Each structure stands twice: as C-alpha cells, then as structure tokens.
Length: 165
Image (cartoon, rainbow, N blue to C red):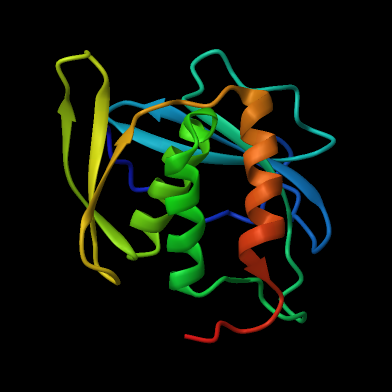
C-alpha cells in the first residue's frame, strides 16, 4: 500500500481559479506531479472528468463554515460497524475503505501489509481504541461501489452534532 500526504481542499477551482462557495458541488482529483501527488479541485461547471493520469477522484459539496460541522460517529460505533463488515465476504471492499478511514482517524494503526499463501495482499491493523488486530484484504472498490460505500458511511457514521467521545 502506498501512503500519500494529501493536502486539504483548496476551496478554489483549479481550471477557472473561481472561489468555491458553500453548497457548491466540486470534484477533487489526485494526480502525480514529479515525485509528489497533488490534489486539484474543480467546480462542477469546469469538471470534464478525471485526467488520464489520475490516481483517484471524488466529488463533494463545499461545506458552510457557519453551520454545524459534520462529525464522525464515536470510535466504538465505527469499530462495531467495521467488525460487522469483516464478517460479510460481500463487504470486503467496504471493510477496506472503513479500515483506511479508521487509520486516518487514529482509531487503528497500520502495522504492516502481508501477502498470504493465497496471493492476496492484506493490511494488518492494530487497534488503538480496542485490543487486538485485524487482517483486511486489499480490495479496491469500483467507481460505482465507491459512491455506494460513501453514501452508506455518510448515513451510518456521520452526524451533524459534535462527537460524544
């Protein structure tokens, strides 16, 4: 697995240099630039699809800084959801995404990656909030599945209220 240091949203359209306003739909893309990976943000109007050399892309809505910030569910709830996903072979891609999210949220840490006798690469995550470790197959979701997983996570694990941790 490759680790990237991804910059925050620039709040400005890369193509038009127009400021992105709260409520604007925008698209972000990660592209290689020399030895680094650079984030570019585009307004809905300027988006023509990801460039050929894109590593990944996603869409979002520019938040309003005056409203309540979206907060993630408490760590125990995220871990419970993650453990349920691990039990379902049809949800391996979702478990992989939630596992990466939990690494970013510092709920677990990435200990290592390993390739089993079956040839499948797995992330070994160690719990920081709970004892134990998890071995998750690296299953990259399809573009359509990414949208489904994102919608599911938003409805299940995000709240408009501050976290109760």
